[in-house]
Length: 337
Image (cartoon, rainbow, N blue to C red):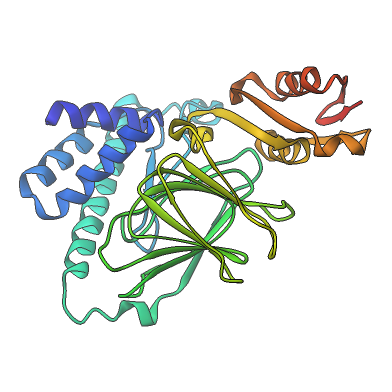
């Protein structure tokens, strides 16, 4: 157990965890709230972790755990200060130890509060909003241990404490949810006129402003998707629905479960998507401006996939080959002719 946790902490500190490894690590952190042996083991390993860089996590003033982008301490400014190596390591070790204790205390407090009678926190709850810029993604761990991966140019609004009978959040943009199961306490995501309801499952929602569809794709469990005009669909693993404005029939289809939220793993996948949606996506992902000379092309259907790290130039070259067009670029402005 200790060796496995040591491996997970190292991966986490390097911001290199896979989705499954991250899920496993947070499982252990949650369980430490009522397991003295596990809590002691986690504390010991955090104290040993003295990587030369800022920790992969931080805990905000409300006790929530977030994932940071890695930064490095070996900057020119710090070199000029000629910090003593031993004192620098001692400082980071102390910080990490403190972070470990805060995380463990937060986990323990949450566990105790969730199991305490007469908990009336929901009535006093305030709302938090987390957002991402273009070419940025963010991991958020909610109070109920639900994990959320927020994609580029997106935002999530959620209460600091969920009500006793329901868990509600509001999404603009795209996010992958791994919802912590809770019997009889539904988790509801609102995206404009469309709501998605679950008890505990994993799925992706894409609902960017200005796009025609709200797309829900399921990788595990059962999801209910509904629209304010009364339309309702039940989706299971490997199913997707695209919901347009009222009175238009939503489009349901089968998908490959492993491709749900492939963007988390650095892969961009499009299956029968309009060129307009693909280009809007790439502008968010790469933080560039893309224009199409012939607007009649915007309704063309595109099916392709590629790794995000190939860069915007190669990604657009792929699209140009598929649409028999040419690419012109000046700095971060691209034109497809």
